[in-house]
Length: 299
Image 1 (cartoon, rainbow, N blue to C red):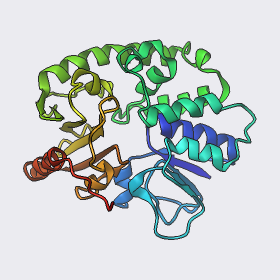
Image 2: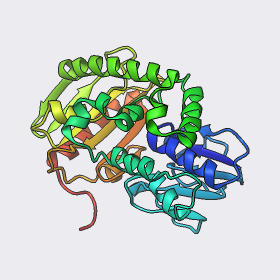
Image 3: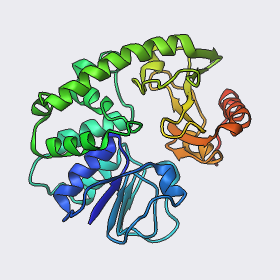
Image 4: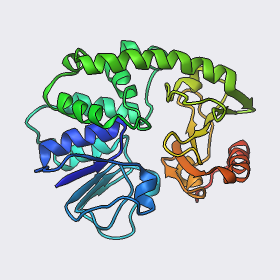
């Protein structure tokens, strides 16, 4: 069997749990949701998909995204939940040789953005939060690190994981990049009423940065938009949208909205990628929807 998941903290923890619960015989296949949705990933009959859209060829599927519900029978679980790792943890009835309760708890908090201002502003004081920020899905050289992190988390407490040389190096780099990213947010963000819009298309190789930081820097806004070029394909624009985790008020179902633009996600956060020639059409439409702040779901 093989695990197929995405390179983020939730995906890594999904793999940790699945390695413990199933007889996994192949290395993890790391991929992105859009590649699964468009059929550009070879999904095998013995694959376990986690934290990704459904594919009919897989043997097991676990997900928690609003927009990914399957309209056909499948083996596994898809439910609206803080994290896919939590879905897996409950599916196997928490019957693991090690206690992963704390790891899953923090995965829930991080993936659901259920964090405090202090955790956002000073992630270096919170091991799980900082560790989650070292996983950058845009890093073409990242697979060895993600695989290494799975092995570390399977066998060690977080305190030991944070003392690993590879992890320490990534954490130092992440703290430095967060400082750069803070400056980029302040210089490349404009605020339109309750929407902050960060456009990094003019910045070469921008760091991923602390995805929650905009909610602290632009506290008057209820939703943020980040625009950049895809790190793997400069002909694609990568756009992400998120409800502020500190200032409520955005009524737009982000995941549902972004399905109209080739993406998806949760009610409060999502992303899409599209050809850059579509940017002049798609970006104003997305911003207009957010400015109108009307729910885009029944009821």
